[in-house]
Length: 160
Length: 419
Image (tube, rainbow over all chains, first blue to last red; front, side, top):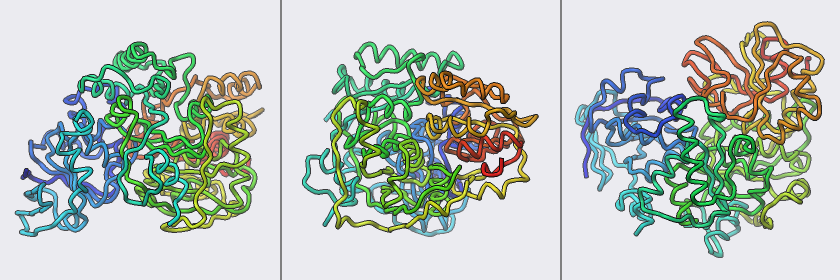
């Protein structure tokens, strides 16, 4: 499986309150949530994002609240993969559980700039920045977690 | 190789003689928790996957606390969905308006969680129960759904940072000042994926309300959990309260820690986290020129009886500064009632504050005290991210109940030892 798209880049410590502010948490409608994604730090994001685009963040991406609405609204907005230096632990497991692809790769985050076109191969963990020609390797998930991902998320995995 | 306290509890719940940091395990759960924001998403997942029974109706807790009494039609619809699910599956620990409290104050108070438990909650501050010598951690709604269906959850066994506490707090310094100080020292990802284990001779002098507050904010350092050893303070708190027999675990003497940090409690000062990250700490005395518009005293971090008492001791017989809005929110109905019985509610009202029934309300910018652009609030809550309590151009300063109450009196950030 692959993804190819243009990059939206954010700083360290992007918290779930800015990914989806709590004032919108009175709904579970994924499309409505997605229409407010990132609005407190990047008002234009929802107007510019195209299906297949890639989100890049620094250290501790997704810190704060446990709201699963955060990875859900990023996924529904059309983001194919989030690449960060590190993920906050609840965001990390929520993404795996709901099937939002994520990758940890500090070197890639340092080199990739906003607006670059990036290609990601999920099977090999290879990240290619087509704009600057650089190639990076993200750590693959351990088999235990790969099983959840390949089942299509946690609920499908426990039904097996 | 020895195990940490967290690893001992996880090994026991995974049915393994030993676990190691980094190991992926499936563990048996004692309590699966959700609230009115996260439970509806979990119910949808539970039903979409075709489950028609919960693993154990006595080991699930659903607490309506974020937006209740409901702030609008959409939140009323979410509460209704939680209520109908809880009725359908006869969930024993379902708490609605009238009985509810903020979940992480309510569950320990009611004895729903106890020492030795393995708990997940679809709320990031579920790490609070480490104060009781339990392993508890925040997860998302899908984990809650899977937990309700199977009674199990997957975990990556964490390594740990050991905090050795010595000495005693000075007057008007509390658990909140300690945890803010620690987050300032190690940063908002300083304990990412790890346990924060608190030990040392200083632990004995910490009240249960202090310990609950300290573990509550372990997540703000990125930790998987915070945890205290069981001692006489714990046993006295659990006695006559626990719904199930507690189990006491201890860290092995040869347990391995990634790092050990010693903290002298007597050296701590009232501490404030400035916008927009909890790690941005300053001593309260530095803030005397920062003018404020609002004070919030409450939340799962600081809405317990001792927090109300700290506020009362500063506000009684006085009046908050002109132009400051004082909002006091006892975290449970029992705390709320006790404030009335002790005359504290009258003192708060006479001081010019409002006293609300329990709700998470303003902490996450829900309602009951939303900030406009340019406004500043000193709050005893746990996060000061951009837009957390309202407008993206508003500011939240995190502090203890004593510092918040003192700041309400002067209208500026104030060291509580000066009022």
